[in-house]
Image (tube, rainbow, N blue to C red; front, top):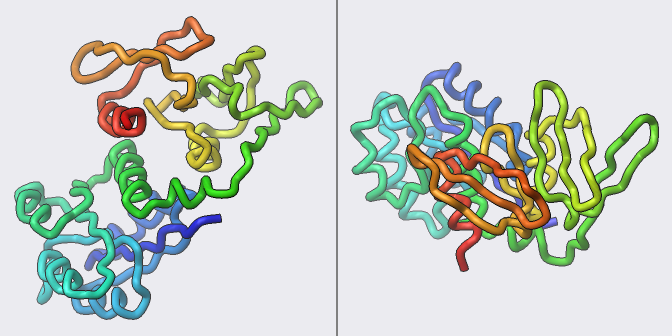
Length: 243
């Protein structure tokens, strides 16, 4: 297995740290999460623990998030920075420090998915995780029998109420496994979230068609279904598909 992300959350408000920690703990790419409650502590813990990523609040007493970002840039191996704040007016200044993203509170879970995927790409986790891996199978229980599905044969997955439908070359299967859990398990195998209700196999994407309000329609080889691509995922999806 390749290296996973080590994260440092910096925020002077305990509730905000706890909320972001809860959201990030759902991602299998994240190995450990440490916390700092001030800018001074953030700089100290960055030097001590050398995190891959810092989720950094802007408005903090004494040492601000911008000052932390400036200080850690002097390190030999500075971590990637994601600003996480309630103040949109600092966005332009944030990107002067090579910020990977600028998240606004309250956090949008779909945007957070995009952020983690962008970090994964920058750190090179995807390539590392795929090195030496053989394509596995997904076990699905149907009426007491366990079916082992070849991942390359799965076209897409959709969440309907409390069930997840798996559409494959051979037919459809149901599982109780949440879409989020499947996403975490299959991200390294070329599966990608395009909507809160859809996870697709990138290998089978045939066509993207503009729809309205920034959203797209997607068609897959081997399926007559048309899937919706949320505008929040379009940019990241196109980046995945383009060489």
